[in-house]
Image (cartoon, rainbow, N blue to C red; front, side, top):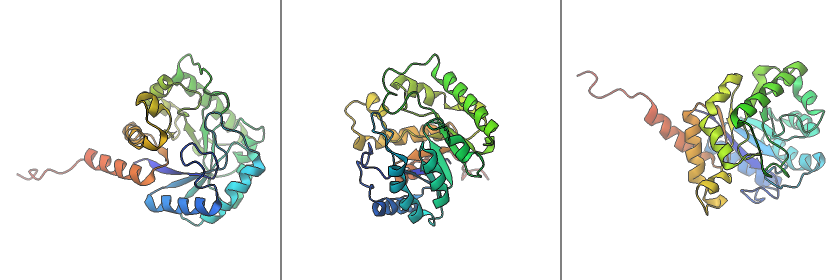
Length: 271
């Protein structure tokens, strides 16, 4: 079964929760609830990267996330810092984070790669074409799957050259980050192709707008069924980590799927 990464958005402008967990005490409570529901990892972010989101400074981001990391560091699960800022990476690790998840694949700031290269924690490199402000303005690829695989090959080579070993790298193809609906579907249909990279694959499709492009008039609050369908598909394809908003529902769906798919001894086997 994939690891479940529960999302803790400590932002006032999250596309899903609309800032419900912007206050540290609310975010900590939410994180503990996700752990109780079965999360293996908590992904804590202080900067929204939805399309057209406004960037924040590293200081603003740290003011949001560091109290939450400190409040959750004894929860018994891995805390991931979702950031593209080198300083936030460094301070979050000091505060108790045990993973870095960067939507820019360590390219947003020159210091980023050096800030994580010498540690012993996993680092997730995500693919994004453009920036959150530009990524959905007519994204183009020659072959979306091959192009993203090539991107990761280049980034992984740069990481290894800087001292970030391959056994610490996780990759995320970035559903919705500079992709059309067709690009997203091609990535999902061909997700096994990323296995050539030889590292774990993380997938984040929870509640995303591609669901509404498939099923019209499905606002974010109604996208749980589509999110679970995507999670089950990903599990069947061997994806290693699922980044989700709805931990309990995802856990139940994956557990039932796994039970159905597991070999069961027939009651007639001894007949």
